[in-house]
View 1 (cartoon, chains in turn cyan, blue):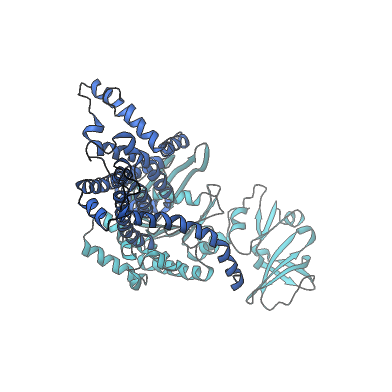
View 2 (cartoon, rainbow over the protein chains, first blue to last red):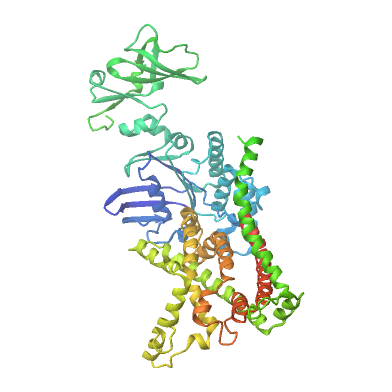
Length: 332
Length: 290
């Protein structure tokens, strides 16, 4: 079991309210990702769930029971920290076994669990090393191992991949997703990286200034963003926003079109422009096109396009994939 | 880029300092060794003669020597125990967020700035004096007989005074170490179900071992040569109850005017200090490695 319910939860530091009243339902076995720009309160929210911060008001229910006032250890949650927070003077085995030791589990049973966790995480050969002798990815796995031996009802991840290099990050992303498939335990994952959110999540919670902007599956957020913030935050490269005449054509205050939904042509189209920077990635080409009154537009096109700085092009939006927003930024 | 030329130049330029330092150490040491083999008494000047190992034999068979050796070890051990345990406790307290933290920290460091003679005199006359001392007043206030610390528990009193001086040092070093303890580690341990005590035992203490070894090393060096506190309070007495090796060497050479015997004692003290140092370095080498 691993359902977590937040009801009217708020958090203030002194006079500053970082999280205005907030409701959220996390179902059993779900992989939920909190995503948002730095300082949006996503880590604070995770720490509230973990019990490392006290809520100012509101209720947190874990598995149906009120956990608002419970100390972190009694919430049956396990957390993986950004800095891994391994105990430097203990061997990997002792690090992983620490929560079991604290729970007073007998040595034989603890050993069995440690070995099982080490096997799942490919750490069997490193059990007698100290954290200082491990690479970043291995440390990360030890931190995850320390979380899984407790067999918690939910895992909390606080930006666990941000200290790894890009290649390793992609790897660990897969490993965590696979772990979720194996364990089928609820996971709550905090990140500022929308690619991580899109690739791993069953359900994404987009946060902005402590407020939940939208909750939904990755494709829901991509296809039907509730407002301009979500539309701009999800998707890479970012969605293009236009105001004025082209928006008025569609009876909107502003319109948004994703870079992949613009068609490029060298001789005819809706919006003329000049190519600025062209980023050739091989599989794709990202073009920054200066279209005068409409500003700089991003466009994503195939890798074969041979356009360079200063070339004249025409862009045509796919009318079916156009997003319309009103003056307050809400989707129409 | 270090070239052969610049290395030679560097050696040339540091050599005066090295020669000076070596001379500073070697000359007194060799003179002390030389004196320790002489029958050399200040009361009969010009009568120095070769004595062989006689001085050593007298010094090492002197009952005062064993008393002094025990006292030295008790003094060093006692002060280390009080300062390390007390320093850790104080560091834990001072690490808590509280109002007026800055001022409290400065006040805690203050005893370290008081010179040993002054602090010993203050303790002797204002606290431990059996007639006018603060402790005497306190004892009388609750209807007890005042206790004459310096004559009935002289070594204990000196340990107390020296501990008071060195406690700030230990506290300061341990507090700095405490502040570098990773917050996320503490939180992880909290999530893992470790209570305050378990976190102290499994996280704080291992984190502090390095700092504690440094405290022990530095303090041992200084505590082996405690002198001023004994001179101004008990004069090593009553009898030899508060005489340590340093004080015994002083008494031998400047109170009994036996420079030869005093030198022999000095050399014995140097050898003992080196034995302690070897043990300490081994212990620390192990601790500082990881």
